[in-house]
Length: 423
Ligand SMILES: Cc1cc2nc3c(=O)[nH]c(=O)nc-3n(C[C@H](O)[C@H](O)[C@H](O)COP(=O)(O)OP(=O)(O)OC[C@H]3O[C@@H](n4cnc5c(N)ncnc54)[C@H](O)[C@@H]3O)c2cc1C
Ligand code: FES
Image 1 (cartoon, protein in one colour):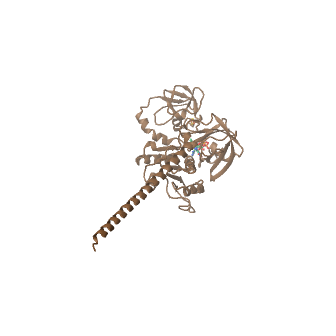
Image 2 (cartoon, protein in one colour):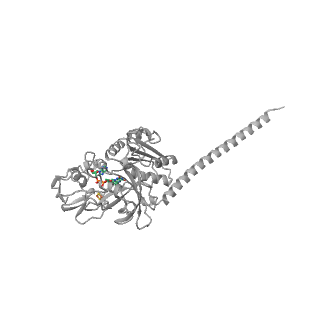
Image 3 (tube, rainbow, N blue to C red):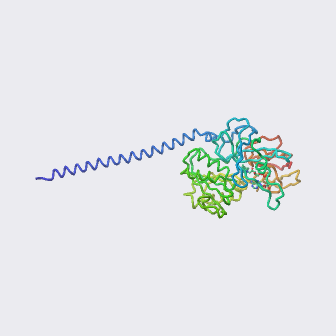
């Protein structure tokens, strides 16, 4: 019997089967890939829809629009002690109308008549919770104690008033949320949030917003404190870490207590630094949002630049004198020749040449020992306004506060000609 025809038939059959199988397999693969892409597309679309529907993101197009003019009355609804010396304050509006959203990272300006003070005191406090609460605003305040070498002196005026005198039911005057240090909610770039001490408040607002909005944006949250006594909202922050695959919390203790437990309380026994970022982050391709004590920020901002992070990816806020801003603007100062003008502080009887090393008249006054009133240090609260009795100033930032004619906002201005200020 001739076996060749059946063998050929069998081979043809095998080839056909192989061909059909490979077509089916490639079809299945293609379908799988298509499903994956489709899933990704749906995810991106749903993120985009979420962003479009998000009132915070809508506000991001116009963050400078103040939600109300001047001061609005707020009632203190509750006080929560977060750690030794740090307390959260929950305020709701006296008029009971819903609260407008704010950009995570912005602050409130408070004006308070403190007993014993001749004029109202103005201070700013960052909003520390997510903007998605229309019934309250929360700020978290550290009490500034008296200096160690002079314990009989009073500590910080406003922070002590908040901690010791302000009671539930009390009413305070509050300016609408403002400030330029806020999260870019429009784009989905991966981000690093860095908070040092009580400087964690604005980045905590960003973290809470990101966790509650359900975005899948990659987030690294570095929180630097000395030990667990300074660590606020430990359980809350750890829960965010546990519940969100895209959010990675890294607590850094510089001097942990013997009772502090690695991974439960903290992750690194060191200060927050760029060396730590290099060992933990997959790359430097992040937007960095930093708030903390000026020395910490000064070194981190400097080292991030050396690591190749561009200025456009660096966002920071200092609660005290704006040391980092000065460093950041050093280049522009170098580029711009300083005109030879003098500043006279009439009441203090001091007259000096403006040498261009201070970024504003406010900073210049502080550097020569003249303590001026200040609040936001960014032109929004009006606390630093001073009458100019001679000469002109020029502004390097837009004026957010309304001031008397003939006054200047010292935190955002430099002298244009020789000037005389009533301070
Ligand atoms: C935009 C912005 C946001 C802020 N957000 C917060 C916040 O969320 N939580 C918070 O607790 N603070 C925050 N601050 C700081 C806050 O506004 C006050 O400066 C701080 O509470 C001290 O005010 P005081 O009236 O108690 O002290 P003051 O009476 O003004 O000062 C008393 C003494 O303490 C020193 N001092 C002043 N400020 C500080 C400081 N921050 N750290 C250490 N020593 C200081 C002064 O040099 C002075 O010797 C923020 C500041 C700004 C500009
Ligand atoms: S400090 Fe607020 S406007 Fe100058």
